[in-house]
Amino acid sequence: IATGGQPAEQAAEQAVARPERRPTARTVLMCRPEHFTVVYRINPWMNPAEPTDTGLAVAQWQVLHDTFVGLGYDVQLIDPIEGLPDMVYAANGGFVVGGIAYGAKFTYPERQPEGPAYMEWFREAGFDVREPVEVNEGEGDFLLVGDAILAGTGFRSDSRSHEELAAIFGREVVTLRLVNPSFYHLDTAVAVLDPTPGQEHIAYLPSAFDEASVALLQARFPDAIIVNEADAAVLGLNSFSDGYHVVIASRATDFERQLREHGYHPIGVDLSELLLGGGGVKCCTLELRR
Ligand code: ARG
Image (cartoon, rainbow, N blue to C red; front, top):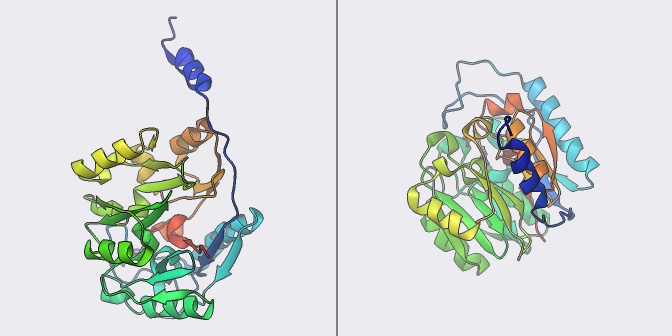
């Protein structure tokens, strides 16, 4: 009793029936960071004055790639293009569901040539490509959860792209407004842990959103994992889950514990070099859904 409520809390946590977590097969697109560097600044993480180590970026990325392969994922690769140092962040290359690939139209001129490059890859891979009219940064801001799409705006994707998204995919689109420039893409502030309809589960950082968006998230996902500021600040939420294995930033230690408590199997990787560009695990990963 003198030690406080901790053991009782833990017992209560264990008493709660957790759904059984199951992995499902994933197909992802990645881009080897052969030309990675930081020569411009389009988010607060980037500092062109700070040196980057392309070899280290490639080595860390390779660990992520091999982790996905080891988990049995089908990992596809797009050729990196010289002069497009952010192309490694494949999540921004589009949004792909049911064989339809909605192309990206980047906010900043530095990344704009990536849009057509990714669309060309989708076309060659047999996807039904939809050219974007509105500014959007693909799966960086759009996340499939159940039958709905969570869509971020505030820094990158224009809210008009949310309407375009709804029209193309015929799905409910839930607009969420980001307010902290360090969490400029939705996938830096929300992690989809289980997208399966009927058992949707996410983790998020409330302070990254305006009040109305937090209310929406609370109402929709009452059992969500709330991640702390420290874990979010190492892009812990920028993770990739297959419904059981969750590949996360190894420095996000509290999030790792929370995931275990919720029945997941977290796998930590170190992408410190790619963090210099403002990206983590999820940014390097675009899910391809046929
Ligand atoms: N330097 C890139 C940018 O600012 C990083 C993109 C990170 N990608 C992501 N899905 N959050 O556009």
